[in-house]
Length: 366
Image 1: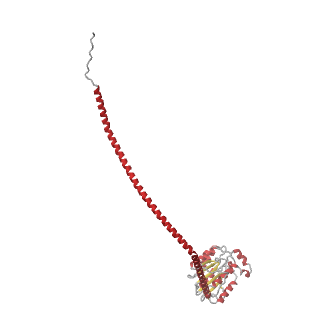
Image 2: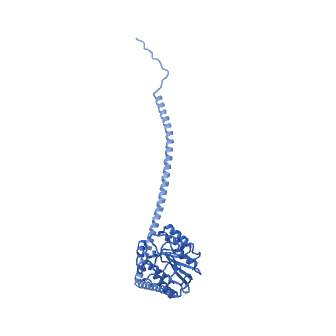
Image 3: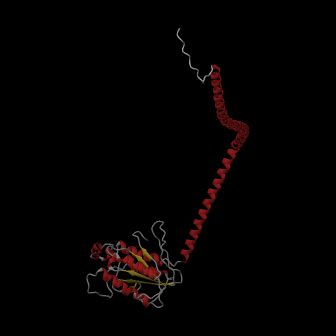
């Protein structure tokens, strides 16, 4: 019989129950570890959610508060709207009442307005009539103080910028050949006509009419003298050289105008002779009126030159102006002539220097 082999005995051995106990303990330990971490996470999440909940509750409360305020405002606006509607109704009723009253009084008011407007119109007409009568009276008074009158065409009013005052008025009339017309060609043509035809020259007749008007402006008690000049200067009324005439003598004034109207323009223009009259009259004039159309062409009674240039004429004028005593206003009535561009400026400067006036006479005056 075979002899059994004896098994060897091991020193370490573990029963099944031990194994189960160890595994269960490990599970418990793992659970405890996990559970502890879960509490921390849950607590954090709960705090965050609580904060969010609190915030939302606050917003809800604010919203309810704003909603209550909005409802209150709406109610207030509705109340105000109702009050406004009531006020509008009252105003409409008042307007209707006023319109009814206005309609009632419209006819009476319209009649009153028409009467008022008519009265205003009548008052205005009366005021204009008073002004017209006062102006007429003033004109009649002025005419009564004048020595003679001047009758123009139509309703023309003879108002100028001339300074016509003064106790001694000297009138210097240019009667050179240039007074026959405004253009050089027609001057040459008219010089060859009979004297009766030359006297009908429109320009010369205008000059004579201007002198006629000027003499009608003399004030009573004043003195005057009228000289005409071309190459020489002489008084219109012969035998009165160097003498002052009385403006009160209307017949003498009429005679002066008749003599001037019968004088034929001829020869050149010597302003030295004209301005010497201003210097030599005793006593000197306190007002001078010159009727002229162009610059001078000579400085003596005769001249050897048949043609004279613009610069020479200007020199003659400047030399003649030096003869005028200071302190005497010189008024210029210029009848413009073709080609003499220096005349307006030169005569204007003379009027300005002597504190006189300058007028460029239009073709339809006076």
